[in-house]
Image (tube, rainbow, N blue to C red):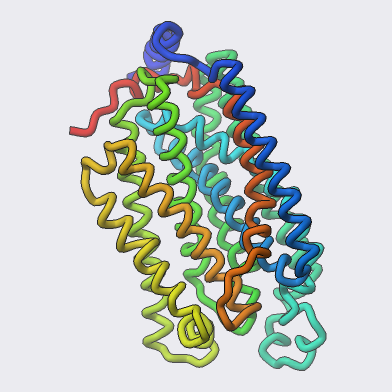
Length: 411
């Protein structure tokens, strides 16, 4: 189908949907959603303040986990938007707006990253502290692991993410108004270099913000491991939002059970991908048996309590959701897909907690401060996500492939 013909069909579909679907949430629903989001933000800010008052050092590490949680979800949304434009996919038009909402959280992620830099000397004390001057391994890494370069790289990462998020979300919204097909062509052209920037910045942010917590340890696959978490968590959020909108009938003619099935298939695929990357990293380190590599897994297996968390990730992040979402019927079922998505969102937090906290606490114990560290960033982005959902169209109204997404089918 040519762009012109697709545009004409897209407009026709958009005009028909006026009578069949709500293009945006009703005002009373939107107001209620925004107020609920505001309440979550207030709770989150109060909880963060309480957590910091209880134990500032523990809260810094807990906040890092919470920050990474919301950042990875937002980055997963950006990845979805980029890859759909890159592939010129038609099926995903119905789902892309919800992922644009997640990508639209990246400016908030940039603001939420500020405390990480403020507490950097406490979080990354191994290589920012005075002991780095006497450590021969850290001395060799000083050209990369030094505060000035760290702050500069981190600022670059968030600026790239904010720029990409704003460009694609604003261009998509502009097309809602103008219907200009050239905007789709521009986003398609920009998606390839944007994907390269996304891959590089996400990988090195994982190295800098997480892997450098234990600067003696290294894994070249670690950035891909964190990216896999971005994908599974964002797709889980997409699944939950899609199910809720479909069950309330807001865009039932645009997004159907077929789209739910496609989202479930993607989520299932990335669950397997996450397990593959995690096992590959573990197998290579176990087989090489190099002390500076194995010590990282030692802290997460032999130290008190962490072995249970490691097993929880094995079963909760792979075995259980794999068996659950293996069935076609579960992926197409609203409750089944929602259960799988909730499991993945919970386990994504457990995985990030497992990546960060053993550096600070070799004896596992989950505390109230850890919950406060999550609620702060989570409450703020929940409000911003609710506000986007309340004020914006629920799907790209005049995308040239809108007619194609309506006809999607999984035989």
